[in-house]
Amino acid sequence: MRADAFRAEAPVAPLLSVRGLTKRYGGRVGCEDVGFDLYPGEVMGIVGESGSGKSTLLNCLAGHLRPDAGEVLFDLGEEGLCDTLALSEPERRRLARTDWAFVHQNPRDGLRMTVSAGGNVGERLMAVGARNYGAIRASALDWLGRVEIAADRIDDRPAAFSGGMQQRLQIARNLVTGPRLVFMDEPTGGLDVSVQARLLDLLRGLVRDMGLSAVIVTHDLAVVRLLAHRLMVMKGGRVVETGLTDQVLDDPQHGYTQLLVSSVLQV
Amino acid sequence: MTEAESRVEAPGADYNFAYLDEQTKRMIRRALLKALAVPGYQVPFASREMPMPYGWGTGGVQVSAAVLVPGDRLKVIDQGADDTTNAVSIRKFFQKTAGIAVTGHTGEATVIQTRHRIPEAPLTEGQILVYQVPIPEPLRFLEPRETETRRMHALEEYGLMHVKLYEDIARHGEIATAYAYPVQIEGRYVMDPSPIPKFDNPKLRMAAIQLFGAGREQRIYALPPYTEVVSLDFEDHPFVPGKAEGACALCGSETSYLDEVIVDDRGGRMFVCSDTDYCAGRRAAGHVGAEGAAAGEGRA
Image (cartoon, rainbow over the protein chains, first blue to last red):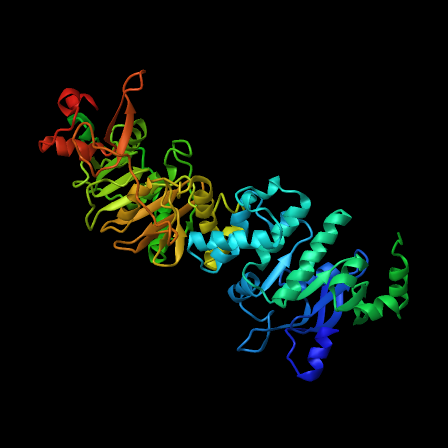
């Protein structure tokens, strides 16, 4: 694994460090005592069945939900690792607009459906102070090109796009400010397999070219096999197994992981 | 305005001064003071039922009622005109309930209630301009949730406002927003200047106090004198205060905001000042437009 080799030669500080993260919904457990480190350039997959707490975990990491206990430390650059839960709301929201990105499963949650594709991509730029129309538009065109959306669709609304295009537009909209950390919640969910394959190809290229770190939540083992360096398997809100992706998938140790891996349909 | 109309009638004995009870006026004045202290911030207030429908200026009327004192001279304009239904009825309302003097002249008024225009003549210190506001939230059509727009104001997250302007340029080649053009106050709050034409935006920095009342939406906001008001724009698409090309047909003014009036059913039209008092003043001073002699005093 590239990330691990990198770590071996120089002790790099992790980009994201999670300690003892717990979220309860009343008496029920969302996720409990989750901890991991994510290093720059590393992609971490979180797999598990529905209700295993993976989306809760992701939302806690991204600041959408407030965990009941634990720390989410993020490398803010000069200040080093800071607990994002202790940041003030403006700081946390600024972080979410600049260094972080969140790709929703349903593009309707992450896009403004009544605003043109160009406006969708430009929103984050304008939110951080871009005030030159020509530059914003050029940037939007560049990003539409990178996610393989034709330039003449820039003034169309996302409602006129196919599901795959909407998802690619959502990715462009999120990556335009050059974030360092991307949270993805089932990015390929609901897409047919050929569209999934192209999206995965695209994501893999972007992650590699931009040196992105990512946390990907999915129940699709093929997706993590392609994208993730490391894997975390969750069940009932707890992490039951972690390790390198190939290692976990090829030699599952925990009973649940074995079940998960053997449940994949073979074509 | 006729002599009879400007005559002060005796206040109706059944009404408290200016219709509202003293506690209500006190509550509104508190909101006004807060609004003046935080320019551009929308202060919630307990808007009352008024004897007119929402959308007819219930917010403006309540603000006017709260600031009027017996010595005041009130002017009411609707789209710049003193003689439209809305303006006439609000003026009569305050004549009846407050017994105050009324006027059509911008310079003589101490309180001016307006809908959709700022008078052409510059206002002076000591005057109060009260706006009727239909929708006080500039972000409303971009973000429907009130909880979210309040948070956006609190955190100064105004990127979305520029998304709207971006959409305008992408679709129309220019910023097509012609009225209710969003402004930023003293580098802080983004504010809806009420549906005044963007032609009036540069006048928002003025000597008079500006109070904005939205009755249905229960919000009050304000601009103290000489507050810095910046119309939002892009570096390469700067704000342009637009107006119809041409001069007023009656008074010949080339600098005032013009209304287009269709004069027949063969496509004939003329442009006249939207501010009737300004136009009448210019004609009285001897200025005559292209059709001024013919139309004369006919427009009233």
